Image 1: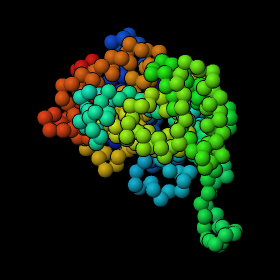
Image 2: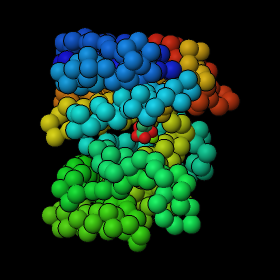
Image 3: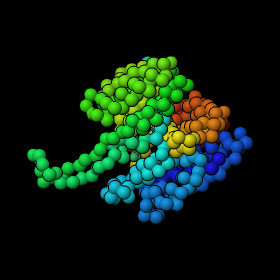
Length: 359
Ligand code: IPM
Ligand code: MG
């Protein structure tokens, strides 16, 4: 198993260190051999090499079977030209490696049911999967830019423009991943679009319904994204698998993360047609708390479990990590983001230590 470790910026470094310790421990227990190689990415890579995704890092990522990614970004990079901004690293990796399927599960652990801002009865037992298409949509559509408007009441002023775009093949491809996932879970799939306003989304909806006919055992529905955003906080347990585009998936997955109590608990996997994957927490680099040993490493540790499951077919090893995480939660250990009275507050390293001990 060749794994590229790309810690990135801010808390990215602290949280990946903990996930790597857990990965090493579980692999030595299971007798699996791993080859780990680390490379700079994001602002860290820009500082060192003038590029958020240097050629050497991209090469390592291409050669690896899987990538463990921390987080990128920082206020000091906010004024850089877009091509040099840290976010370009993760967008570039997704595009170069064709990681079109982004799995973002939201699971409410019984111990954290009170950490959510929603009522316990709304979220307890929740287990949903947001499947976000990751290489298309307004994120990558051309043309885009900032230009001088040539007509209209604001003629002569600057205007920004981006292009929402999906081809039929791209929609079919992600839908098949979604239906296959639903088959292994709760056998329900909801496709989320904005077909009432956007042509791209009209096509999305049509193609989704067409693919659904190939999966008669899966209960299929479509929902507009504004309604989906509302339903996710009204009654999230109505969902099993949600399949949506890149932009809506970005927004809905952050929303869904709060159902679980903290974005610091949310892992993700971004997969291509083969089993290659990039695994990362869905949260960002949190520069305000970087280096303070307070960040929650569990999302990254759980991302390492997803890596073992999806890229290496090591179901048992993945289960071991997930059970260890449940165990430390049951023991009452909490980082600041999930702390509540009556539990024990621990730092990033202590949380890593506790997971290792539970393993
Ligand atoms: C995410 C992030 C990224 C995105 C950023 C960092 C480019 O928000 O992974 O959800 O918008 O996809
Ligand atoms: Mg996001």
